[in-house]
Length: 319
Image (tube, rainbow, N blue to C red; front, side, top):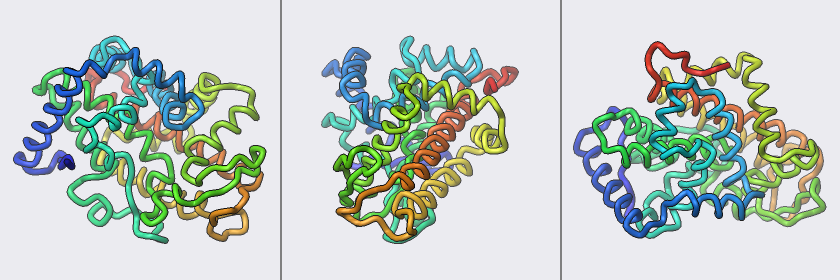
């Protein structure tokens, strides 16, 4: 079944229907004892080469390092002592469980083919897309009247979906399923065969780590130092918690533009086609975009969590 998500401005009836469905799903999975951090740890350790867990781990780690002590303590309490990065891939794991199949549609946005801009009314009908999910779960995280387990689920989803919306091909074209149907070779990585979506999930990130001789911890450190340098982009991202809807629309629009103008296009400006070999030039452009998107996801996540969890007097983000 499909979850009908609700923005903060949605009707109470819609919110109530979603709360009932989410609570039922959560309790069903808990009854099966399938939400332990031990399962998460095994999953992350066994799939460390994919943006799925690794990119999400990086953005979660940087966001946690940017949060003030009060907000971080509240997040840790909701997560039973776990860190943001510990649970950053939870939403990818749980969607494989029957009780959470409805969440599959919340990880991405399907744009009409060859369209380079995001339109909420067109692309996120009934709020069922990653942008709607972020708005919904931010609202639910803030709602102190909800049971703690429901706010915990909201926090876990929010951590993950803020990462998803910043991967350009999670806001990709419908017919090729965000690049999943475009099969290429990574010419920058020994001609490894891959689909275009996976190139942006993992291929570029993996090669960047190889080139810089570090793993996710080193990547996160590099992005944290860049974020604390407080450039104009960082300042813009850090304001996300002030108007989450505007921020989410902006993030989705950025990803749509990057997908259209970068991910789907080779260095000659033509559309990437199945069978094409992606060059070093493609990688150089892509690696800059991947680093920027991971940084934006981290800073925006920290800002949203600070607004949702921090005491008013606390410094929201430590930069």
